[in-house]
Amino acid sequence: MTRPLLEVSDVSKRFGGVAALSGVSLQIPRGEIVGLIGPNGAGKTTLFNVITGLYPPDSGNFSLDGRRYDPESIHRVVEAGIARTFQNIRLFAQMTALQNVMVGRHIRSSGPHSGPLGAIFRTPTFRRNERAIAEAAQSLLHYVGIGALSQSLASTLSYGDQRRLEIARALATDPLLLALDEPAAGMNPTEKNTLEQLLRRIQADGRTILLIEHDVRMVMGLCSDVTVLDAGRVISRGAPRFVREDPAVIEAYLGRGHRHG
Amino acid sequence: MKRNAQLGLLLTGLALFLLPFAAGLLGDAWIRILAFSLLYMMLALGLNIVVGYAGLLDMGYVAFYAVGAYSYALLASPHLTDHFPVLAQAFPAGLHLSAWIAIPLAAGLAALFGVLLGFPVLRLRGDYLAIVTLGFGEIIRIFLNNLNAPLNITNGPQGLARIDPVRLGPISFAEPLSVLGVVIPSAQLYYTLFLLLTLLVMLISIRLEHSRIGRAWMAIREDEIAAKAMGINTRNMKLLAFALGASFGGVSGAMFAAFQGFVSPESFVLSESVVIVAMVVLGGMGHVQGVALGALLLYAIPEGLRYVARPLQLELFGAEWIAPEALRMLLFGLSLVLIMLLRPRGLWAPTRGGSA
Image 1 (cartoon, rainbow over the protein chains, first blue to last red):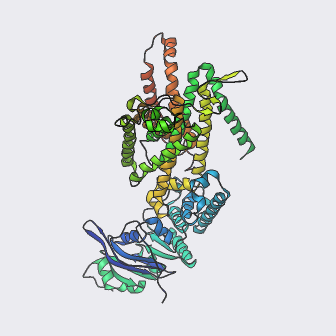
Image 2: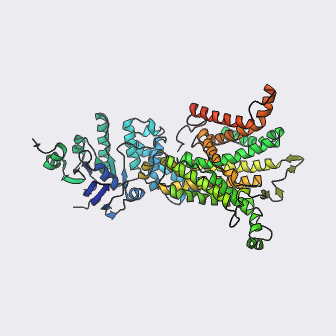
Image 3: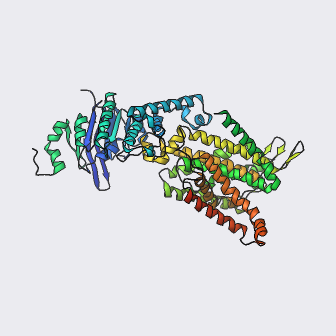
């Protein structure tokens, strides 16, 4: 068996007296779509935020692609190859769709030209770099299906398009792992379908996806592997079929006393 | 660029350089008003980098103006050599730093102070940031006010006088210059220099705005967490915004000291910071042309009223009903309220979030 792309172990995180995560481990195999589910308050988003560098963990080991990374500084995490979207969309509202994606591209195109002098003197390297950033961003907008909207302000896009734009912006950082926090929240069935197709395509193009999602049908359809959290601990892990039958999972969602079937 | 646009730009530039000849017909005071408006434009453009682009509300921006003014004043006036015999021995002819060295030096020093302010406030936003920066502005002013003992460095509230004017070869900007029979007053020489500097500041602002740096600043302004999550090093970008914004203020300050020949802490009070913020907000945050317009209106109109209000009232009513100073503040306040009601995004707001 090949080594998983992402390996985290013994992750703990407390908020005051509340243990949001205690000793959580997670492995994400390369090239798969992996689901992270659990009832409300289980710690999904906390784990997600710790992995992507938003919250500093109290403890834990983190490695991506066989290399340890330090989740203390977000831009290092992005540099290492993890990009994310947010549960409540966080776009740069007063910037165009194209600019939003261009910002994501910066980290993969920095160099001596990226300082203020390059910008002030418009050096040839600077201009070439700006063109490359814009082209990469435009092609990503096409890739997620909103290529025609590149000059629209992000705040004027429809809800579904804003979700896609967020994915395009995350892809611009050229991540090994794309982490999506409830990407289908608030979408209608048609929008969900197109989103599923997009995620399959991103997977087919060689990226690994971590997905937090409430829509069980979508998780079961997309994910090869599901990890279930409850009260800050992993209670089950495996193929969707297996997880769905797991009594611990059923108990977490429905409470004690229920029997499946 | 289109040919017409280029021609238009050339003509506008030419008109700006010739403007003082027209203003001079009304009196030299008007040329001084124009020159000062340019100093305020530089200040507003500098603050625009911090507030307009990066979205960091700085209520103590006048501190950088003070740093620029005092660094030139100290290095181009007899004050230091008068009070420190060691320096007098080292520089028997006095310090007399050339303004051409002082401009980049003031920019650099102000940038350093910008970073100094930036570090402790990296984690602050909004109201909290405003309060801390406001305090920073006051600290600088109080330092200048009190650094006359035990060592007399700033000469305290009396300020520094006898500051050298700008010199270009044999030409001293303090004296009128006569070219082929046309006499160009001192204020106009300064105006021309300030205009060149302001245009340079505008060019730098626009180029930064339309670059990865400008995009990163705007991303921080729009959503700092999302900007971080896109791999933007928000710490460095914020410090860069503070440093570059401050450097424009420093240049403006050095020019202020040379133009006035005198500086004192009184010129760097909190209300100056407030006016500069008002210029940026009123003109249109994040829009270079808008901010320049805001600075021009908020400086030139109240100043102009000083000269117009009294004669106009005498002419119309036969008596002075409202003192010019009161009228100035009244109209100032009224226009602020009206503009915020009618054009909340500023007089000349950016059409989009700035272009790529």
